[in-house]
Length: 104
Image (cartoon, rainbow, N blue to C red; front, side):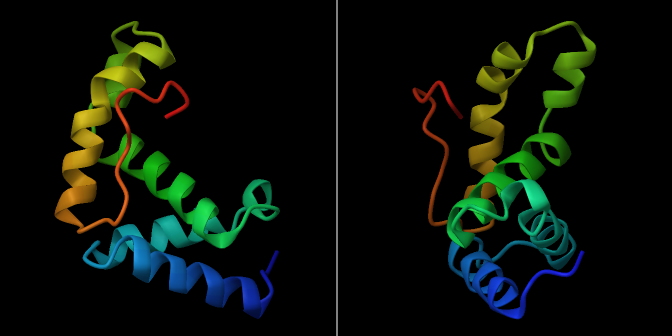
């Protein structure tokens, strides 16, 4: 399914604002996830944020390893918050995960 041009522009702008120094390969994966049908009803900025956090969690942290070792999702989320924030900081993200936010 092809997203409307306006949605694509909004996603592109949100990506540039949120992750100005993220590598191109990561940006393209986050862009694709931001355009996924399950995120289409959300504002572009929120869709990009959720897609970025999920991408970093799965691709740039020990999250998958923790799950493989038997940790439940909530525990694995807790243990990778700092790793996620380090990656987001390296990408000069304008927003970070709050370690005290249980919905992160």
